[in-house]
Length: 216
Ligand code: ZN
Ligand code: ZN
Image 1 (cartoon, rainbow, N blue to C red):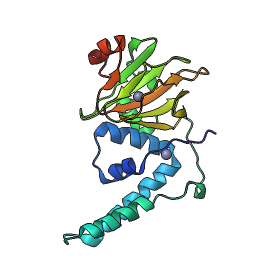
Image 2: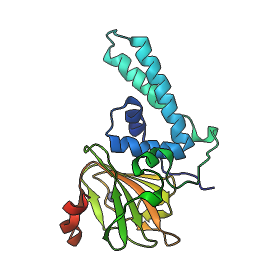
Image 3: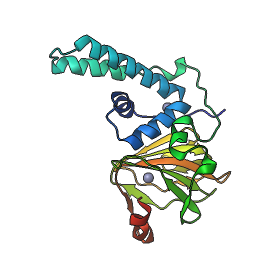
């Protein structure tokens, strides 16, 4: 069974637990968490500590120093990965949080071609961030691009690689303005990913012309 090696950041887990993130970001985090014991434990720890802090403080005025201390405690609550067995649900391809958005299984997804054999389906979320499923044929390279904001990519089937590493089912890549990459689907099988962006990508050449139509 494959082990997940690319996880959520503490900031994302904190935002998810606090309920401050856009719907599309919540969706991809919930989907990763449903596949990843390590991040699920971290979210549960944040929820528990966050709840205790709220209960302890009530309407009281709390100092910044107290808040900083509480936040440090919450951030340090992420357990050591070695302490838990990591089990990954191999199937179905679409984990529960995602199934609600695609109306069943991946067979129900209405794919639209975006060129080079790649297909996408934009999921219905609030517009602060966009969630899409991407279907990338085995061995196909995505356009070389940079990012104007956050891009989260979670592998549901197959795998891809780029300069940052190798990403298989359950792995999540977190890209920002500093990263420029060319993801390439593994040659062994077609790759299906859930991708979330909160700003348009930086594309070059012809791909840029199609950008408004594809909402990428
Ligand atoms: Zn994880
Ligand atoms: Zn990217």
